[in-house]
Length: 293
Image 1 (tube, rainbow, N blue to C red):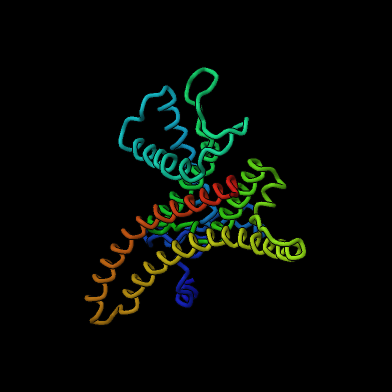
Image 2: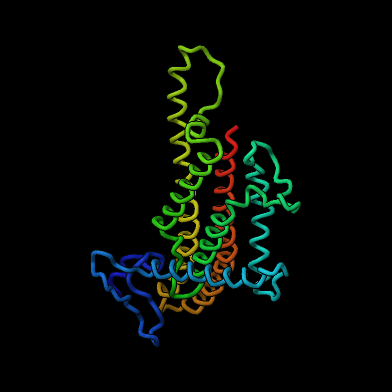
């Protein structure tokens, strides 16, 4: 195992069926494989489940605390509520807009009881909130030594991007109809018929490919940033092993530790930033689908 690690400088940031822990804890914790080689259980899979459960526990508890209309009390609960309200009021509602109600009119007005109705964009909040906090906690798990960040794997971010694509398509088809959504990929063009029969199919194909690429970029952006941060930390700490037994050790080791601490603090910022960027772009895509013109 040590030899293999010596040949693979990325083993710290890759998924595996082993948790690497300090030697006094055993060195390696092998994950049980009840399903054998046909369905291996990896550490990223376990961390994704942990992240999902944390999101569920935190926000079910928060929902119960504010169910009676009173504000949440306590710094821990205020922290999560503040982020949720910020995403709602500064990202989802302004970006998606008010859309159309059942009567084809704009605005959310009042309901039958004379109370202010729910903002039309709020129906997308469960997806945006769930995605943001899941990505955030996955990113933060990577800041804990000997664990890892599932969002540093392209398959995880790829599934998140594909899910976002389905939500975008469904939102557009629900708002303007299936035919209307797919027709809206091509803007109105005042051109002769003989020209339109050639241009419209080509532009539609380009726009369709662009729709796929935009969501693919969501996956690559998140994966690349998280993967790069953990790789830099691994490389900086690797300098210590590279000069072990050399007089330079007493200079390189402290510098590497301080460098790792600095990059680690930057990683905490990136954990929040990349989660925000992902859901912000997802919200923009939903808004574009809901308001094709």
